[in-house]
Length: 238
Image 1 (tube, helix red, strand yellow):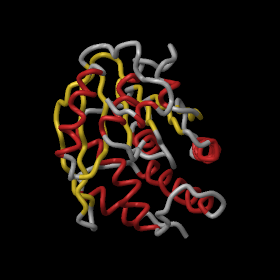
Image 2 (cartoon, rainbow, N blue to C red; image 1 turned 90 degrees about the vertical axis):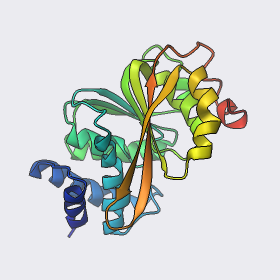
Image 3 (cartoon, rainbow, N blue to C red; image 1 turned 135 degrees about the vertical axis):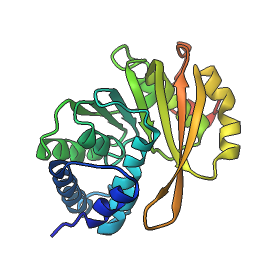
């Protein structure tokens, strides 16, 4: 029987309140994640308590920034197993969410989660950020861009900032040891139209791991030549 006890206790620790019906959706989500993980590699985290902490609670720490409104248009770049996009959608059910990932097998999993949890105004798309960030449908159309993708901040900024509308936000989820990474990314962030607004360190309950949320405000449009062609941001970071 799938349990979300650690999620419930952790939410109390983080002073976040979630309605019972939404907690039931997390329970279904976890069950699907663990079932699918036996077929395809979605996550290396398979312990139930660790899923609660390192996936669900970690995703929901973004709410501590008080930067996301219920109704915002959000894109999750490099979503993987749906983190943080699906947890944010479960809690902020009036938001419109797009999940972007480069692996089609993950998209099939995400679609099943969306259907089984009866989530509306949420879609998953298969492709690369460098391509979708140049399309009229997605470029500069989002209030909030979130990413937990494993890339340095200068690379991640080129993937993500083109999606944010002017005045919108890019929230990067990183480890707490990012001082040098932030310094190295300042040129990229400025070039792409962003400005670091604040940073928030949040300790995940029960495991004494501190993650840093870097909140970047989009203050001007991203120049049309960005993002560059697939592979370029990683090969030659700004």
